[in-house]
Length: 413
Image 1 (cartoon, rainbow, N blue to C red):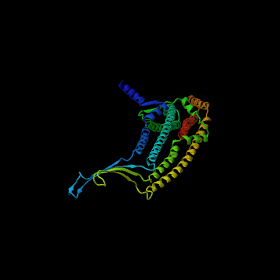
Image 2 (cartoon, rainbow, N blue to C red; image 1 turned 45 degrees about the vertical axis):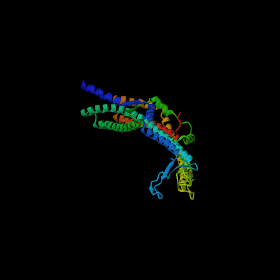
Image 3 (cartoon, helix red, strand yellow; image 1 turned 30 degrees about the horizontal axis):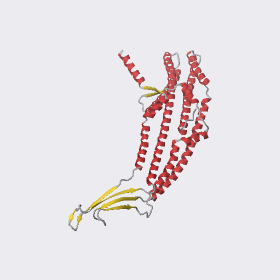
Image 4 (spheres, one colour; image 1 turned 90 degrees about the vertical axis):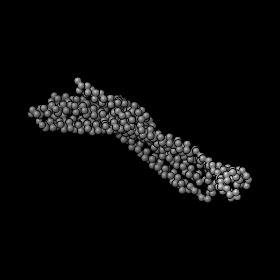
């Protein structure tokens, strides 16, 4: 009784460790818990801090002087008769502050685009991992079903082989099928573990996630098609892809940076006021103080040249990214189209017929209507075909997600 109770506890704990989640549930958990996403958000906060810092002026400077030695009265630190004070403030000229703030604001826009791209990339990773796990579990279920029958059949053959009623060759032939199915199962389980671990990291959920996707929902996803042809999808990608928009914004940002560096060549003004008790022309003299560097040469010329080269470099990078994005969209669309057309050729009746033939072969073999060689050949073919069909369906979803990741707007209807 105690052993039975212990077994129930183990089974219930394993069941509790698994959590059934729909794709939308996983996406919601991802938005709340993903550590990469939460960390990237701080780059936007830091960019806000840079804007705040750019708006801050230099502090005013207060200075003073006192007498160290009075040679007439031979007194040290004759503070009562000689002292003075000055207050100065640096006044930025040439629009330096305005240009610095504009550049800081452009950096915030870049940080927001980086965040948007990371969000898209991680969400695509989440969805593809979810679909991978869904189809691997279907493959495992199908393989377990075949293994259950083949193990029972092999056990029966071993008994009959020991009695001399069937040949050892037949037993070995069945054993090879079982070994192959077990090998498939090992590979599938390895993939499942990898996908489960990825989902844990992406969603921040410690429990094993079991995809809650019905066959009807899966069929609807497979049947959806993109709105528009290659050219339309390329146009949408150029308008919405955050990575490409980042490169365009980088050109604008580098121009603002160049403008800021150019304004740094304009001399700044030091403006202040000073009071002197006894050292000036008048007693308790108050003076206006003005100071400005002599612009004999451009003190920031190297940085201006460097900033101008950065504009040209970023323009070339943007051109490359445009070509690269258009090529990727074209390739992803064509890949999806080929896979979609291939699966479309397999009708529901064909899949139903395959299951009918499978069940018919099992029944006929039990009744002795077909030979072991025919049965074994069919099982090998069925095993490979079943796995290939699951892979074909999964690849269509993966290709669709790649298109979504590139275009970054709703395209599948």
